[in-house]
Image (cartoon, rainbow, N blue to C red; front, top):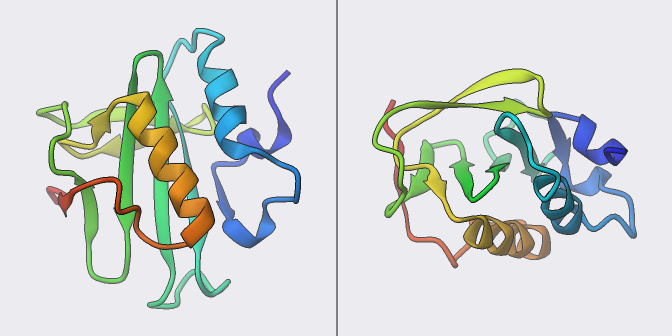
Length: 135
């Protein structure tokens, strides 16, 4: 059974219930042998999604591949050493198609580390070297 938190395509960091280990839930789901790439967007900052101070980290997984996408009020960012050379598709909560720009794909271990850091700091993960994403 998929935990409820993973059935939502996006969530504000303040709405993740105490005791929910999002990283472990995603890791466990990935170990089931996903047929399609899944992704989730976690927002931090003000609760008004139109606020310029909202930031988000989108994390995706699919077997031995993962993806990271950072967004703030200035631009979208991907890992500077990302693997994919073209656009790929992930699925928010396993349902809604999400076009992912080049260089967003990375290793699951780095994605888990970045998500862990973001959940603790609510800031862009420093464990990743970021560059502006292709528009």
